[in-house]
Image 1: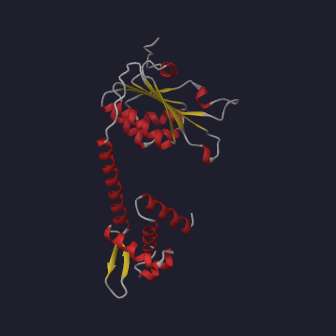
Image 2: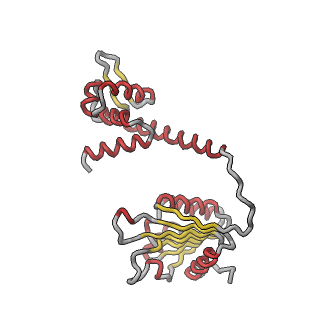
Image 3: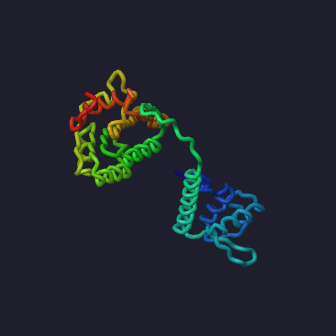
Length: 271
């Protein structure tokens, strides 16, 4: 990545973190200088000179820029560690505020239905990983996880499973390959690890464009199944998943039996 590309990407990230475009451009300009005047910032950032002052004023109030009261005034960015900590705290505060607002929002309660059946879809690796961790954290008795794609094996996942073990839940994990099993056994020595014999998870010669990435079964009633396209172009490799819940859900029952067929350590009570 060139310097220009790095600058453009950094400006975009700063905007994601709450800065306006001119503020982000001025901040990046000052990171290229030991210090600078409004004229120098304008020349590097391409921000109109009359707007540089407003942008710098905002950056100063946020603690990202220091001002030397000379003639003309000179400005400098705070250190990288200090700047990133300020932005991180600002971002966290926004998330905390949003969480408070969401918790205070009145939500209409769903109708009470013991036979409620739910099937939802998710798209994107991060969203699916987040749902996987949420399901593991909310599990009450049992977790069975089949790992086919090693990209599933994140530190967050291992932490979530370890916490489930510490809560004395039954945890069983399966791997599609010997290498995956070795990783699972070394990282989760307290769990039962099985090698799955379900070769169809990765497709076959006639149907190799789609592969299963993960199957998660929680408390024998909730399933999450991820799929991906291993041979697709970068723009098409996003993981997708279906999430099914409900003891009476036919999809849950069917896939539970497929899972338990591959993991003999868990019996299917529906048989």
